[in-house]
Amino acid sequence: MMKKLMPFLFLIFVIANVKSQEKIGLNLKTNLLNLAAKRPSFSVEKMIKQYYGLEFSYSSGELNWGRDYRYDGFLLRAKRYVSEIRTNEAIPFFGIYAGNLNKKIISNNAYTHPTGYLSFGNDRNFKANSIRSGVNAGVLYLPAKRILLEVTTGGGYGKYFNIESFEEKKPPKGYVDFQLWLSAGYSF
Image 1 (cartoon, rainbow, N blue to C red):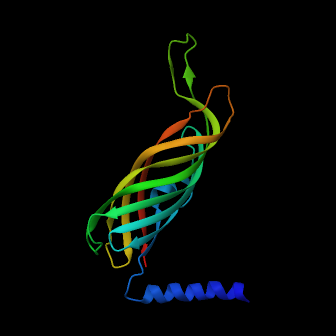
Image 2: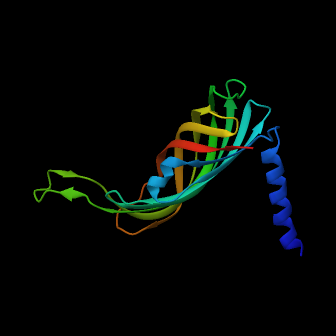
Image 3: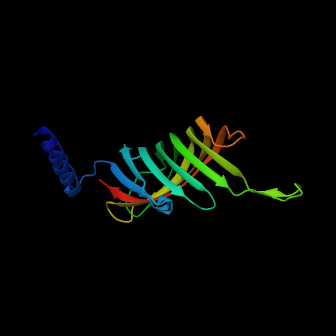
């Protein structure tokens, strides 16, 4: 009985807060650019005192543009907004992030000329987990009372561990982590 009652009570709580005029400071978003990777992503951000935000994100996907690249991972962002968040204003923010990323990369498209003097491309065949961290910056825009749009970019470094290589050469030990998010969402 309790298992059926809890989701119902949670739904009533969410509906009551959506209909209320007072914001509870919770943003639900999705990265629209992740749709190119054939899967949606989701983020939940808790606003703290109109100037700070703590965001938890999950994304996964696969990109098959010249190689088979599959990934999934979590990300935690801490943000500091430059000014108070208001409707119809673009509010810049900056912050830091940390998270994990699980990757599987299979790429066999390197070319080496028969003479050996000319080569380009890169063969990579490995699966690994990684931890990553860095800094981020972006702009939040609320065109309406509850609708939000956000552009976020970030850069940092990721370190691989639990590496499983499928070829003779050594896989990389780390990578430059770059992020670009174009998010749309709803503010509760």
